[in-house]
Image (tube, one colour):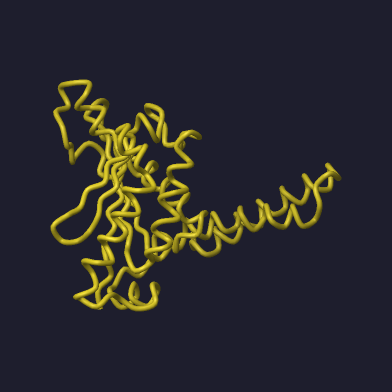
Length: 222
């Protein structure tokens, strides 16, 4: 089936359902129904477009309004790291978030499943959303970067479960950031299942560290 046709059909079905609900319940205004349809349609289209993103350097530079000059990268990323360290200080101190400064000037923000997700779930925990709000505000401020959002699991279970779970968790973070104003063209979500552990899967503490989502923030250079 043609993807464009199926996507359009799904939006039509969603729209019809929402309109019917609105007619049956007069407490919803037409503007509220229209907004709901827009959100539903946007979510469907966002999912379709996500798989077709142009990740060439030229396309990314165009999306962020021009890259950084080589000499400016260090200062730009250092300032961004300082904002993370300042605004997420309580979460970093509590171990809910890790911030890594990498040798190539990129940054990595690491969140564990204990703070962001329930075990076996890809639904973001409500208590973690303020932290994601802060992250989204910072990456919007420093818009000349790309975000590679990686989902990881521990080695419990098998790839049939772990691989899609890691993908769903990465996608949940990407979709949340997009809904809060981060350009979709800047982001890429990918799941690695249990293939990239950072700790020993034979201990519960190690498994805890392996169940995570990482956001790799990479400067866009001219």
